[in-house]
Image 1 (cartoon, rainbow, N blue to C red):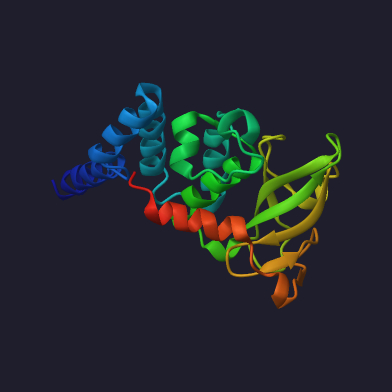
Image 2: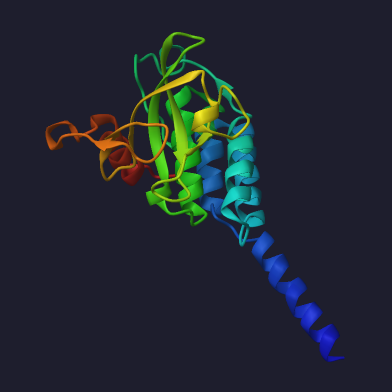
Length: 213
């Protein structure tokens, strides 16, 4: 009897966890009004994913979040926003269902943060994509400050250590606290204080604060 009781309690807790609303019905309604039904469904899918990953390992969170957002379409800022360099919020990215490399990284970063992954482990990393001969951004995850980081990317969907991504040349990284000259192992050399302000990052944070969704 006692064993059955605890099994029942566990099932109730699991059900409540899976039904947890990370985005309220009010938010979903606003998303639908602004971006349409398909956008609302994308946010609902993210809600389900977030609930399913409660209590999961950081490795599983990285895998599932990376895979979820890599379903979105790559579209340049010029085509999507009529701007040369626009950093979309996660809701804008989900609303459009598309974005460029920075938008993939932003969405993954804030989702992993929401799932409890320490932001001290997550870095926005500028690289040069050798194949395309152009600037690119990826999200890097450091298990420890001296670890070789894992790379979450929208070009190569497989999460690999940076040392195995010979197609990427690291330039610099930041996580909102400081900028670093990127190296493939460890955090690299911190950028001099005069260079530490990343205008796009601060604009993004301010936009998220003001976002009504």
